[in-house]
Image (cartoon, rainbow, N blue to C red; front, side):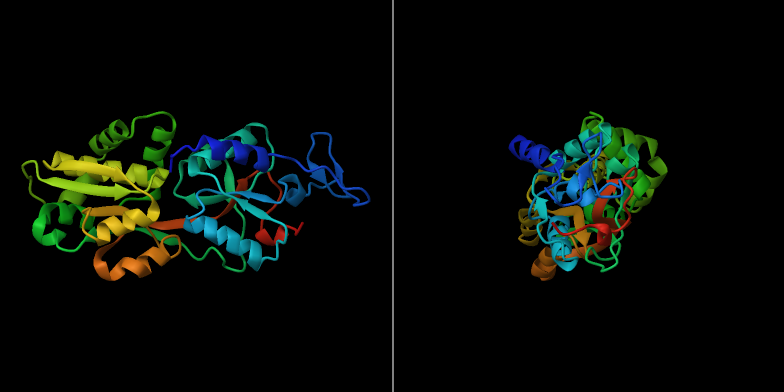
Amino acid sequence: MLKRKWKSLCLTLGLSLTLVLAGCGSGDKDSSDGTATDGNGETNYSKAVDYTITGIEAGAGVFKAAEQAVEDYGLDGWEVQASSSGAMATVLGEAIKNKEPIIVTGWSPHWKFAKYDLKYLEDPKGTFGDEETISTMVRKGLVEDKPNAYKVLDQFFWTEEDMNAVMLEISNGGNPSEVAANWVEKNADKVAEWTKGAEKVDDQEIELVYVEWDTEVASTHVVGKVLEDLGFKVKLTPLDNAVMWQAVANGEADGMVAAWLPGTHGDLYEEYKDQLVDLGANLEGAKIGLVVPAYMDIDSIEDLEAK
């Protein structure tokens, strides 16, 4: 999720880190560090974040769920501010550096949970749904055309810990291809499970598509490296969400390991499920929701207030 849209970043920085001054006669005041507090001196986090949730791309499932949460929890006057996943991560890091309050649209696995002490806000209304899986989808006919690639994609399965290790190294400046190659080399036993029964090929072409989220950059490059080591000529193509699904469904690409279900990509799955082959989960226990730094003394979306 690393398409850095610097215009969006500037907007997000300006909106998500602005602390609100108390209104006349409201009974609220600012603490010495500029954080909005209520009459008893406790931080009013709704005011402190300017009634703003720092989001990612507007078309993402977690963004739509955050907008639905604003409605479900009666958070009148709140805004889910669209930016990009890279901009969101930058703003989050700046807020944590300055120990400022911030609420972001979050998902895991994600390297931010390995780098920062974060927590999800409880979601008693279930707006963000239960745990998700990340699944593998391939085009129809792949099993006949490229059975060895199909076998690898069908057997690919790893853990949140595996993915976090790759994502964190990339987020720290590592080249995705090099990081993936190092991980594959160090995890030969796990890779052997994915390639069991798959034979080597001679420069057979295969194209995998992905959305540029940190999770999918990590998984797609790792799988791409495994296929490359089997002799495939691998092409990895980043696309927008809808175009990614369309490319596999239409047979323009061979597959993807980037389908978040049932929530994040649920609408796209319903649209294209009859035109592609679902190989099932490649990672379980994924989650989406609203995320805050652990130092914020707030536990639930219900603790937020309308403007």
